[in-house]
Amino acid sequence: MRSFSGLLALLFVSACAVLPLSSDKPFYPKSQYPPDPWVKGYADPDDCIGGEKLAALAFALPDYPRRAYRTGRQGWIIIRLDVDASGTTQNVRIERALPKGMFETASKRAAKQWKFAPPASPLENCRVLIRYKLGGVSLG
Image (cartoon, rainbow, N blue to C red):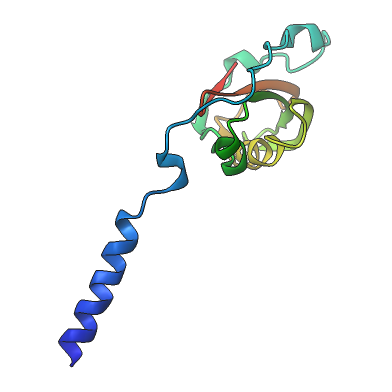
């Protein structure tokens, strides 16, 4: 009886492993990808001076939100963040998002986990463009 219940448990676990995820289905865009914003057009002269020298230690792109993937939505987000003296992101906030309400949560969650080599001095108001296009995520 024990071996039967063990075999049953093994079959159940293996069946779960082969079930397709919703992201395994091909992505079919149902919305046009909006033109990328000109990020430098938003910049102030004092924003994130020295940010181009940042070296990422832990940097993972956000996951494509399931709802957006399922419905074929595309868009982009501009995130603003600070990097403290230890290289940790602080004050992560959304500056602009298109479409609104679709990609903000995933982007903010990922940016809060980013870690950089400690900069020479803390950085403020760094802008990052994140694209959600054709079912994939990339930086601008």
